[in-house]
Image (cartoon, rainbow, N blue to C red; front, side, top):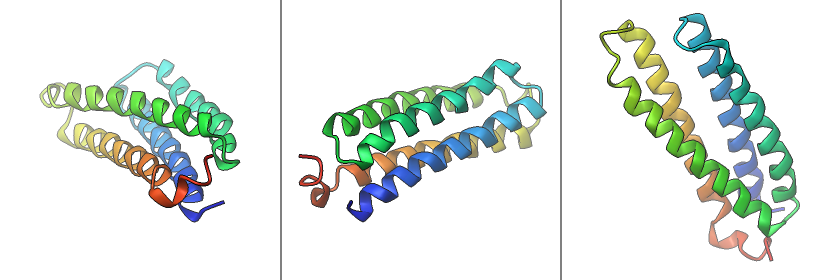
Length: 126
């Protein structure tokens, strides 16, 4: 397995860790209901389920991981846009912390997807 594919898998799992930190922050500051706890569980299930097959070189898993990552990136960008409108509603520290976590998750998912599609990995996914 190419090192970039392994790194990509680890970046996807790191995004789940950031998602857990985001949920803990939201629940601690009473920003969102406890339903938000379901988010990292679903991400972990999808990233492990499809990610392990991606590590095995399955081309459909690479497409699946990128599709899920793209959806999560779009949802996080919407979340970031929504957060910029609530600065008066919550303390600045809370909003900035959530913005940093969401932006970090977007960066991790973008980097993980980019690592998967590097030219040296094309042969591995055939």
